[in-house]
Length: 215
Image (tube, rainbow, N blue to C red; front, top):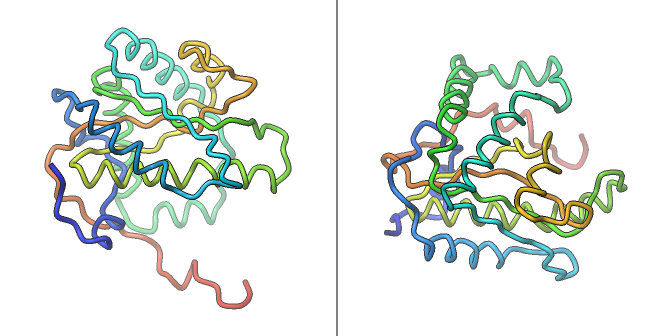
């Protein structure tokens, strides 16, 4: 099934789906392969095509990965938010409460998600310059977003998480990934959605983010 969405609708309604993932319905392999084929049409630095997509559907393997996901979330991590972050995060009352509620639901049910997508890229940026970081991340992020758009067009839901970060080495070992050579870029649950009627998110005003000719 392909949804009848205009390009603008596809771009504005590809949401982070947590509570509305259908945990009872397997995702056909051919649909995931179609999404990967579209993802790898994205731009890639120097045409090096260093992207990889690990798809986890085996029940036992999903249990192992789900356990790592939960323990990674418990460690927290990341830079603390500042006052400007907090203002933007809470610009629309109730939005963060809904996000946290969805995250709790995902935490409780992550082992039931029918497929995990773990995008990876060859080359590590742990202590790299901004230039090298931008070249590496710029060669995987467009592909992953294309995957998520392709999934949405097929009635599938995704949510970009960085839960792999605190336990990336452990996850890489569990999946047979050569940690010293390959970075796990994200951890993306994938499932059919319960309903397909997603709406654009409420964001801060354009004037706060658009800059003409100077900051």
